Length: 376
Ligand code: NAD
Ligand code: DAU
Image (cartoon, rainbow, N blue to C red):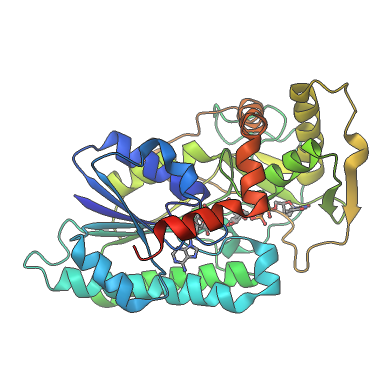
């Protein structure tokens, strides 16, 4: 099988590419990525020379390039992660989000449709797998995650912040209600993907996942930004009062789910992926500060004073909580890590990889790869 992964040089994409390249030596894994500020080939240095791996620098908003790549590599399956992914950037620059997330997805759908419909076997054994987000569902009512029973025992439950069973949470049937330009662009792309299934009979799958955390996340997102700021003794800007709730999942658990769903999911379906692991931002930040200080050898409370409450994000969604029981029931997936364990592992990775943090915050890696991959 020849599999095209888009956005494979980004945070989640790099974990997906690594997993597929190592697990399926007989499959060709083609990583299509524009290497925007968020894409970094250093994330994949360990698999760069593998015979079943190719990197192609291209823009998904460029229809001709996408069409050429899908045909050239005789692609059978697409795992589409390439996107503009940061909510705050979408508030400043919504058009880029429409271009990449909506037009880019549509270009990929067209390229796949044109190639697959030209094959004698048509859509048989083909799959367009679109990676989406829980943010398309909008915001849930605000409730305190502390002390609420989990719907079923899960190894990911921290014992502190459980899934709010019996209260509102997102299921695959939840109506779309996006609030930010980012989530609106993702919702739009989801609708286009579904329309290709309903109109042309293309086998598609969409998954909607909660907040990921782990190594290689660009330090504009909450966890790596705050670890990096603690390293440098800089303020930790908590939006509003820090009351917003997010459901956190370790990135390798997401990558495992993507592999499972790509190979065993039912075409035409949607699956929610989440950690049953809700945290109020301020509680998470305090936990993060504690772990980071401990690993840095600082006395307890050393960086507490860096926590700074700042103006809230406009349209800030109150609470996300994913019900991923369909995925557990149908395909047997469960998160594997306790949150405390995952958080410590993550903080340790950023502290051990200070050079990576410094290079992506200085922009040096962009210059390096511009030279290395120009013309490819
Ligand atoms: P990221 O920002 O870290 O990576 C995005 C990647 O896409 C980068 O490598 C970038 O270079 C590439 N890219 C951007 N524009 C492109 C273009 N025009 N053409 C080709 N490549 C382009 O994002 P991420 O956090 O890894 O998210 C990956 C996907 O997962 C996105 O679709 C996002 O919506 C979705 N998602 C993310 C989370 C999360 O918590 N991070 C949760 C659920 C879903
Ligand atoms: O839910 C899935 C989504 O999770 C993905 O679709 C997005 O691509 C991903 O970026 C993430 O979106 P969030 O907006 O939830 O993630 P972020 O890390 O930006 O923020 C997490 C929470 O922390 C959110 O409530 C805003 C808050 N925050 C964030 C930053 C960057 C702060 O309080 N201060 C900050 O500086």
